Image (cartoon, rainbow, N blue to C red; front, side):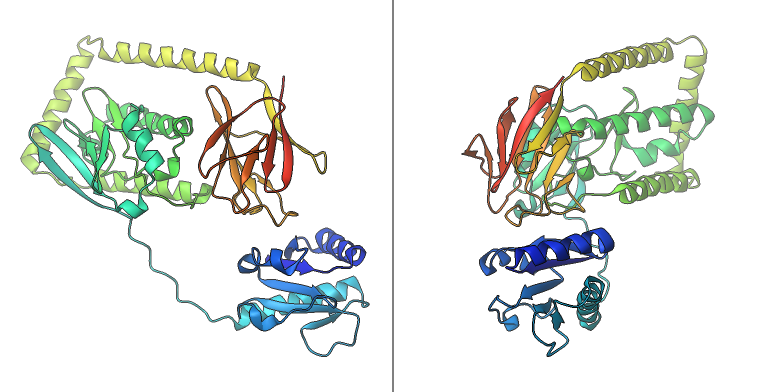
Length: 423
């Protein structure tokens, strides 16, 4: 699909052309309507092609070489860039598509980039009686809001974390990596324990939105995930680096696949990165622990009680969620009602990224703002938009969270919505 911008002052013709393209060739073009050359400046770097009407004085030399430029003309076609308005709409479409394809084919081919190294280096250090895994993260890459959340809260499933002078310190005293833990828990009884740890990791990932953290920053590496075997707890490091990249379903599955592959490899490795004598000793300890459980230990019964209690609490939370009012936005210009059906709901004009796409307003940024559901209500946050975000006329600072009340007005650039709660 090509992103194109159309600047045509004959509104009737423009609307007829766009309607035809959207109805019959919506898979080919994502269309932005531009009202002036000044407005085009915000769009040009996002476009594959620009199309201008006869009455727009423009010099195509002003635009980047990798962007196709075409002219919708009432005169005879003097070059491949000129497209006669009075031929059939299908012919116009074919000429527009050909311009895009020719420019794309002429663009220099870039070599595939090598996989980037992670934006940190890690080491294990001992300070007194404590052991830490230390991740070196440059200040310019640091997500400071995430650091405040990590250091200011005890988040279940995340290890104790501190940050100072480029060093993110994760406490791992008394723990071992998931890789090492799995090495000595490959017996049948280890299966239940491993599944319980996976369930805890998933629960941790799903809980992060409450703290305005992204599960995409969790370090799903079998050698970086740590297990406290005595407490039967698993801890996943969170790497607070900046970035708008969001993993899709395929990337998420690939990450899980890589984690499982590493554990399968561990099951075939006798040493598992530790001396054979130590491995043998740990296996003996593990077998002794199993014998104690079989001899009438109440540890397993206590765990079952714990899981039953947590299951009941989850059911109660689900009931309370079902009773909550359903939030929505009403777009003032069109009357369209948009249900806020996610904990994190993204607004903007990048259809590949946001949950609601405002593709017909060039003043709205690609990733303009988010609506976040928290325990005490819904909040609007500006994501660094060019033309700003407002609640009841009051502008939000970048990354500022503003609580939304029933009936308040939400404004993205000059696009106005009314926020409402429906029981």
